[in-house]
Length: 158
Image (tube, rainbow, N blue to C red; front, side, top):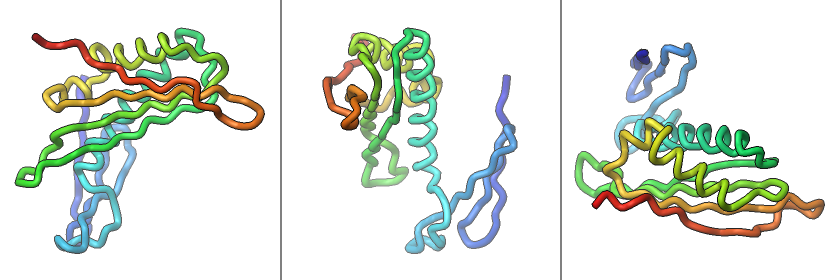
């Protein structure tokens, strides 16, 4: 099972990326380094890929656990090194789950399964310290109400 992709130079620092799925995305650089700021930076896509990977895992697991999720999103923040190659040095993932009676135990387990078993993006980035935070909101007629805020810690590798 493989994945193919290519990037084609358009002009300046702008590239059109195409993957084997047929979907396309624009890449570009900041104006300060010769781009025109018309697309994602490659390192942004690394973070977006991680978020998409874990989000798909977590929502799938929550559905299998019959949790009544009415809204869901994952936010990420990556800290980068000051010196080249300016890799990520720490990533924070925030899972925001809204629903009816969503169980904290189910959310924690879903995050854990994504992190340690299912998400290939997390497995590839495992050497980067990550913080996993979650927020569970009850879906009420007045709007979402925060009921639980917590953090999942990966098991120690010692």
